[in-house]
Image (tube, rainbow, N blue to C red; front, side):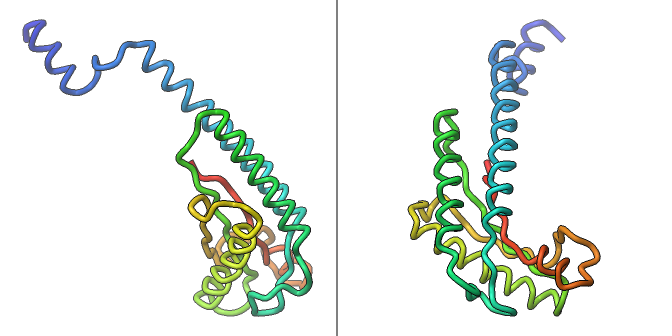
Length: 167
């Protein structure tokens, strides 16, 4: 194959389309973005664990007021958004995932966890998080923190919500 044909072939594959420093810069940027995502998610998970809202049994209604806890979570999301914007990251979503214990059947638990996550999202939107930047997901009992959850205390730890950023 002649040099010209090889060059055209490599260009068609995109191999020579970028200078080596552009490839290195992109790789470094991706690594920095992944590191930032990890740091933000660690902070959001910690904040969520400190500020859990308790729901009534088999319900998406809060047991008692959760306003201060959700203000704390909203503040953590606003701080995370500032860090992302400062780093030039624009295409992100905050994800609130609802989780249940293993009691009951899984289809019911998934539905209940979706409803609970949606309640949290609604409250966070009311506290200033833009609706287009946040979504809710129901996980049911598929991602338990404690296994087996065979005591009331263990089940209580599995009934939770978590907040993450997705890039």
